[in-house]
Length: 278
Image (cartoon, rainbow, N blue to C red):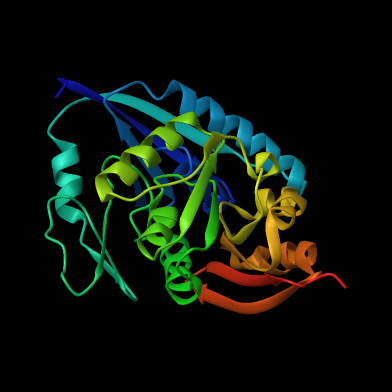
């Protein structure tokens, strides 16, 4: 363990939920929320994530047509084992048949065991967006299904699908996420098919289920690619949507059948079905 670590505090004037969701897709040490602040910690400098946050804020300003001020503070602090403190705050999650837990907890024999270390990779099952994707996967995945996890992050959703007997492919625009997901597949002793750095537009197959737990504006932007990757009668799971943008997202998927909408706090997860063309 290094003597010092870096702490970055991000305080947006608005659109905190979108910025938090953006950070969750790109930062792998956990994010602390305190009042209106988002706090990131790492033993390595966080210069790149700071620049990406600034770039994403400019994109949000263009999308919503308003000025967004973001205060960003970076401090170098003496390391007092904040990772161990974070570990102590993490508890296992029960979702349907799934039991998601870090390596320092025992599994459950009567559950489908999924091991994710949230201190090392985001997507531990605690966030409502991830939790509700897991609920839907527990309901709809069948043995032999082909599944595509778009923006896979830690790989928790595709690992869950694999544990139910599916063969998942994974993709993410962040190369580090792909490496973390592969590591977690090995940890859970399940297989994936293809993996690539990029998005659904690079898919070579048609899938029974496509999962996209990202953010609303990206779900809108890649809607054609997500639908194109689906087989007829295939299921599409959309998540990472702040409730106020639900209708805006659904407008892009009017050609699909809405099966279920789950609201949890301010987050929305949507299950759609591709209507077979006649």
